[in-house]
Length: 396
Image (cartoon, rainbow, N blue to C red; front, side, top):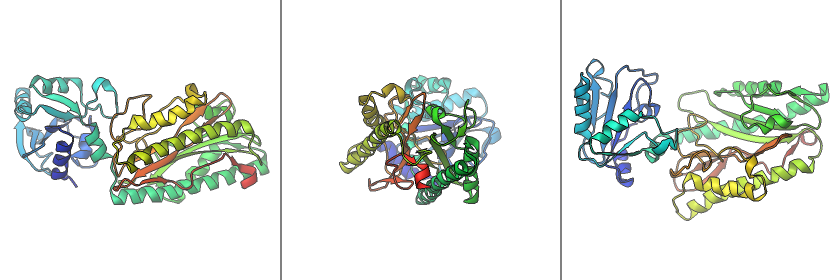
């Protein structure tokens, strides 16, 4: 439900004079969601919705689509000519020093940069400073309702259970046939999801040996894709319930096809796990102390452990991502590598911590999901945290 009072309270908290939400032909999906546009909405004319920190919102709509914002509160201003549109924008932003938009300085955060440069220039020409709506987006786009949290926790039960099925499938196939293809393992996971009415935007990553050294490996495309005894296997899987509004679960674990795990794998896994655990502790300690926490800080805590162990160059992606209705959501990410994520980690938000070390022989990633409850309690979801490489032929 669109809650004007809640949005205006947030504008005051973040010291913004107003929020100008703008969309043209679906160019700003974030604005569409905040404004609760109908699913699949595809208007053909520009529309704007200005929310002042105090006072009545204003709707700016084209004459031939004058009803597109009628579900929202506020006064309506209808334009036909482009001159009328610019005059209307000038009228609503005049006197408001800081106007939030889906803009990121220097495109530092592309998840937020949804407003074109020309529109930003136009608003600035009327004397307003355009500031990033990043924290507002994190608050209103990526904090979960009780129903969404429930959907995530239920999805987590299915994704966690998938690993028991995966390791047993690999063990059975290797014992019976001497090998199993990566794609066959991926197909088994997708069957598991279908049986539990889960959906995913892309099949899982199943990478054997060196294939797992590619963080975004496409299952089945490596030079060698057979999993045999003595293979090291990385499995990254993600899914959500197949119903509107559901939230993803996203986990990565590793296993070795044998009865005991060689030291070279254990050594690297332990470093990755130590980095992961440092990230969890960073989050827990900040919220326990009531301290504001930004995404970059958690990335630094995790990355520092891996760099200290001498594997910094082999950890080649951000530590984690926000997660909601998309696997990679639009809220605060755990990143000080690809972007300098200065947005806050907010209560009722969900994100991953997933450090990795990627070598030519094999790759290790350990991915867990973290939810921050409304009271600041930090919960790791998705079943028990992996503490050792799974010895597949010993345990299954």
